[in-house]
Image (cartoon, rainbow, N blue to C red):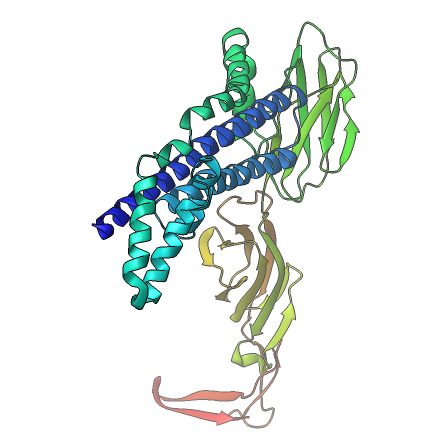
Length: 440
């Protein structure tokens, strides 16, 4: 009987503990919702009226999320885990102290009962006396509803902290929905600067704000509205410049030698435009060209490597190997005498070779996935033709014998000659009976 009574007592204490944590969850939910709604009210009003920078908005956004996680974690999830007896939670002794403080007629009786039960387990020789005392105390405590020590309804008085920001938000949603809508939109677009609405609009007339690296760009701006500012400025990175004014509504801004993407914000009359982005595509470049020249064997000249200056004067039959060093290019378009060759670029290097027999023109055009340069490099190759040796021969008869002939002459060649042969035919009865060849 005593064991059953004691188990019933523990069940009543356990019921109190569950209600104790349920009360904490409800109150924590009210506090968390009230704090988050109050901060949300301040945030969307501030974003709507102050239009802070994207960096500040990013800080506010993540700070709000962090605070939300902390509030939910400490005020809701932590007591929920304790109610489920996961992690640290109230012991029966701690719960008995809270119950005793609430009920004046109980005071320490409940705690003493739990302590006596522990004593009975440690001192079995006096067990019957202790159990009798425990049973007596349990009977005295039985009429007391421990769970009533926790008053769930008391949380109603905290609802006012939730209703105040909620009512203000609902009121704004009814009478000024634009403030709520645009402030909330600005909050979630934390990485974007949203400019305040002006009595005029900024319109960029350029159809395209994409340029090739190193190019210049003139941005044409037009203002539209009833009240136009006298001057317009542009925020270009850390610098601010005044635009050139064409008339009351048109302005322009010149940018020289653009090397990287730019984010521009136009300002005038205390208002700012949205961000306009100038996108820069990498310019393919041919940095240098090295040419290896392998001359025809008849010249007896060793191969040589030169840094090409473009135009070349070459002997006929010279084998030319071009080596190209590029930047930001994936293809070179090499055109030789009207024939196109797409050269693949690997590690910024490419090459092409050909044997040159006739004068020709060639051009080199670097390309990448964004840009094909229109101003390709065009050069001339002039070929020196290999002319046949020039031979002049004079024939003179012998003044004494009509059977003797004398030959004299001259041989010329641009690159010299290695052998000269004299050949003649012997005839008999007007027929060639033999040919004689002699090296001179």
